[in-house]
Image (cartoon, rainbow, N blue to C red; front, side, top):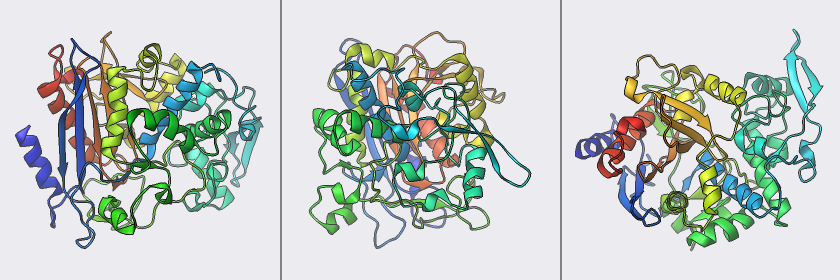
Amino acid sequence: MASFEQHLAALTAPGDNQKLPGVILTAVSSSSSSPAAVKEVYHQSFGASSLEPDQARPLTRNTLFWIASCTKLLTSIAVVQLVERGVIGLDDPVEGVVPELKDPDIIVRFSADGQPELTKAKNKITVRQLITHTSGLSYEFIHPKIARWWKWKGVNPLTIKGGIADVFSAPLVFEPGASWSYSPGLDWAGILVARLTGHKQLGDYLNQHVFAPLGITAKDAAFRKSDLQLSGPAEWDDRWASLTVRLQPSGEFDPFKPSEDGALAAAPPFMSLESPDDQGGGGLITTPDAYIKVLSSILADDGKLLKPGSVAKLFVPAIGEPQREALLAAMKPETGGRMLSGGLPLPGDSDALESDKQDYHYSLVGLLNRRKGSIGSWTLSWSGLPNLFWWIDREHGLAGFYASQLIPAGDPTSLDTVSAWRKEIVNRFGRASKPAANL
């Protein structure tokens, strides 16, 4: 562990050779004899909160991060809670509660002059499809049809200042349930949760049913800067981890194109801290300490968030084989697949050691992985755009959270670092059942 920490300290050291901005790493473990007794086994911070010397602060347990798509886990938990209570079923259509998703169009193709050809969906979008990325929705930075749709509209979706219905108004890219594509389905699922429970916003529900049971307050978690219970602007300045970008070799900034050797720079305006809607797919501001409490509760299966039977379902596949094949097809180096895998070897990676090769699937709340050919337990994980990563490994009794604020997504140095850290944590703190290669 010492050599890893020395390496990471060098990567985050200020100066011309700095390769990473500040990061915080936290891991917890549970013992086989007492799995509900989860304890912190690792917590370290490296670097500072900003590249700007006058804004740089030490990273602490209370540093606030925009966690982007790590928000999806919390929204998915909220949905599973409603399924537990019988409020709605996983395979129920959502159009009765979210009429914006009724009778959606599907993009079939584009004509030679750039006009989209549309057809009406035959299937209804269900709850399961929203939270497992099988609804037909997709992001413009993931699917070329969505990117081309917005180009045809003459709109850059990153500049839209409206709510979820405005930002994610593009048609579907396939029949609901037919395939898999990473999507804003969890943003719509957040609207579903709020409407089903009579809340104005998703955050109102999460505050009561996810955050409060874990002792998380509005001081440490909110969807808007203005909703954080802070003492004033000075506290924000002290606690906020600023976004950093790795520029392209040309000096340009592309939030979705990873760069191997680009220089680090303070990020230009990129995302709103005052969105009109609580974006359940990527809008939460919170601390590493707060987020690890969620991971700890799932690892412990302590009943604070979900019933034991529900927790078990988070660690098994929730999509069919055709959808899984589409997931695996999306996990390619040229399509940002390493961001999906958290830096683990991708499907078909012939250069990976045999012991490192992985099988992948998708559950109700995130990606599943286990050693290729294994029939053992799945590990659960996902990530957030500014190179944040979480994972829960019940076989080794571990969970971890790697928090940074570096764009573009899928940064190679970040991915190498988080995958190395996971192996270090398993080797040092994991139950002595399997080697770290089984991550």
